[in-house]
Image (cartoon, rainbow, N blue to C red):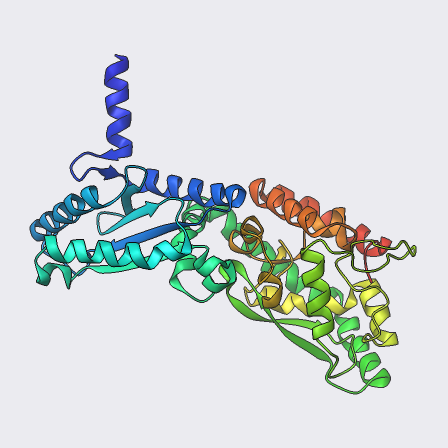
Length: 375
């Protein structure tokens, strides 16, 4: 009986016809390898072989067999082979690779495939190689297909809780419309205050990173003088992520690590009021209406922040849509370290539910009124 159960389980996890893992199992192993990198810092390589151009199923079956025979004799026993997408795209995870090895291995495998297969078949296979992290830096994957290759599980997770996310989107739309109506007076008074106290536009637009590192135009009421030096914030936030002391807190304690610059000279007098009361963030309800943000989620990072991200930090960008408020805002705001902020974001990702969103939304007004961590 036990033998039959083991055989059934093996059949579900492993494709004995082609000698590779089935899709579900392969993606679990890919996630495991990505998370192992977060601790070991050892890069790995993923090769994908796309057979979708071969429409004749009998020929495709023969080509896949030929590819697997070649790979079995030219890859290590520790390398993981499996279906990346259905029975159309094959994947190979090559563990613990050095950046220098990538080009050598890529050339070797392509040469072996050319030697062991008919050229017309090879011409119909889409072959790609992606290293994690690409060239030793995760930020290099932002605009490329490698990003989707290594985080394909995010899309799969969204499919499994599609109904919950649809309800979340409905709440976002209703909540943002309600907020715009409730705070409509401030949408009139704040622009007047900005225009009377400093020159420049009412709205401040900044490029931010949304879910899956998609860029969007982030909106705020302008709280700084026009043409302020952005390098000041770039250096500050990168030092903060790198755990370098970033000045003093509101109590004057030296070496305190805070996420925002304290007593920033680039901020106008009226801007300090806006920041202290969080009124500068009201235009973000427009971002929520457009679907670029959610009411609840991690804060959207600026592209130069991601340049300093460690691999485990990336999950806060990839797994959920950014939000106006979140666990960080209601539990720590700017008074936490960057790693603690990310841990709160990942706690939210792991434990996400509609009820958790509601609890965070209910706690947000108290966090705003207290002004803790707002500079």
